Image 1 (tube, rainbow, N blue to C red):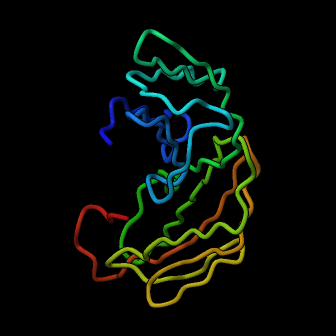
Image 2 (image 1 turned 180 degrees about the horizontal axis):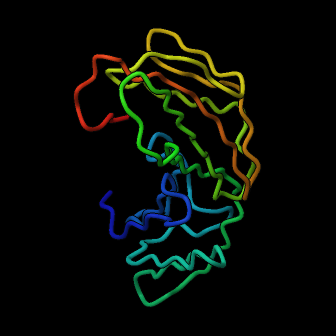
Length: 171
């Protein structure tokens, strides 16, 4: 059946709502698995969807001018990763430390999280904090927990090759 309306949840980018000729459906994993929209939600043609993300209220407009409101109370983590270096100029033969911050902007704890980051070209791995390991040029931290509304930080240090003649290292 055709999709008449699609809403991407700005708070949870893997959450999509669709209104179709045979009702509403939702996915919380970017489209991998779909399910009916809400318990007891009528199986009617949904022509328009609108989401109030701050109150977690979804409104469905149906054929014939009917409207239904549904509070989405599903709890899901939503992770945002950022990475910075020390911000000070370094040169060949110097150490460079990267700090990765994983924030959970979702409404549920994220458990069993793995972060993987490559060792940049023209550098060699020196160390990793917070239990990180280097295997084949990839630094990995496993089994992390990031509470809802919280963050986790990890870091690793590389040494810039003495023979490096470029002006920047990209990671």
